[in-house]
Image 1 (cartoon, rainbow, N blue to C red):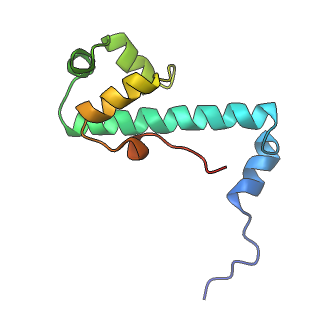
Image 2 (image 1 turned 180 degrees about the vertical axis):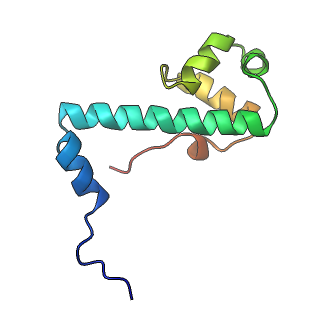
Length: 102
């Protein structure tokens, strides 16, 4: 049996490092974490389908720079572009985009 007595919850670790939920630093951390998650999922799905950034951009009607910016976490797509990306990559919206439960 594993002793879990001394384990700390992830929320406790994040609160210690970035502040409690609702603080500016924690909100900023959460936004960056969500951007990173989207970037990784988008890159993985695009590469799995052997589609270049340019090809994906053409399919969804955007620029290669926009796709690159999403994949590096510098840009968060609009709801419309997010939906187009999901259709283009044959992904469920909830699989590509991470939402915290309130």
